[in-house]
Amino acid sequence: MPTVNAYAAPSASEDLIPTTIERREVGPRDVLIEIKYAGICHSDIHTVRGDWGPQQYPLAPGHEIAGFVTEVGSEVTRHKVGDRVGVGCMVNSCKECANCLAGEEQYCLKGMTGTYGAVDRDGTITQGGYSTHVVVIEDFVVTIPEGIELDVAAPLLCAGITTFSPLRRWGAGPGKKVAIVGLGGLGHMAVKLAHAMGAEVTVLSQSLKKQEDGLRLGADHYYATSDAGTFETLAGSFDLIINTVSASIDISSYLQLLSLDGTLVNVGAPAEPLPVNAFALIGGRRAFAGSMIGGIRETQEMLDFCAEHGIGAEIEVIPADKINEAYERVLASDVRYRFVIDTATL
Image 1: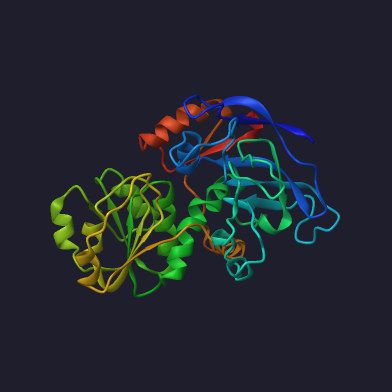
Image 2: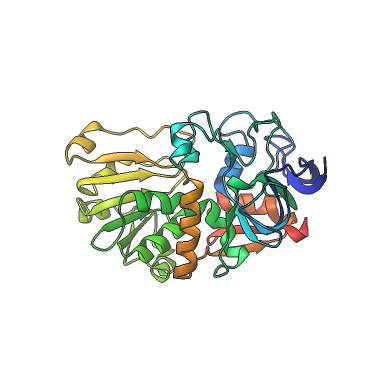
């Protein structure tokens, strides 16, 4: 079993350190990917620090992976050596339940296999993209179109599909008013995608300090939620609200911003519960929904859409020895808008 260079967390309370991890041999349906770039997602921090439950360590996170195919198994038909490819938040599923058969592998009834910190079908613990190489079954590898550079493509594999999926599912497009809560790693992608889909886009952020960015990225309007007047001004305004923040917010106040039959979709994943006042829902036949990533088919659709519209993430490329500093900056909201690790520095 080959070993590869990686950065991993030795425990929930320690910094990530350089190490080596083991990858399985390339099987008949496997693809070996030389990773060029790996995005840093807030989920990486939650996971390695045990916010979402205990983990097995050492753990190399990273589920925004972009690189090249360097070897394929004997039965692989979807990819060939030299292809530009990506891997997102999952690397396996049962492939036989109703959701998997419908192309919604992220909602596998037996539980999809996460790219890191999950038990794979062979019983091993998956290790993520903060590494030089990864071996993934071909069904969970997507093609990165030529129209997108690999560094700005990496965050699309999580931040991109996490926002694209609900925008598509709830019909963002011409004539629709869409609000994006938060302008961070997820939020900035939601703004770009909703704008490209033709919706009228409003950013709802704590302050106006990123207003110039929001308008540049495609927002039509920008409001500060720290201003109580915002909630009065915008009451009943939106067909769809995408909440991207990973902290607890007053969901009931945001529900009041929806028009009749509007939907608030939560894609941020705070560790705390999000209480909802029932009257905020029943007063306008409003819906409060959740959405995770997308299936493999939809992820490919998202990448093709981004290539067609010239969309990539706004990134800051860092060397591996800046990962721990980057974590602190993510927690301080000091990134515009996604850190991407240059894995050549591993």
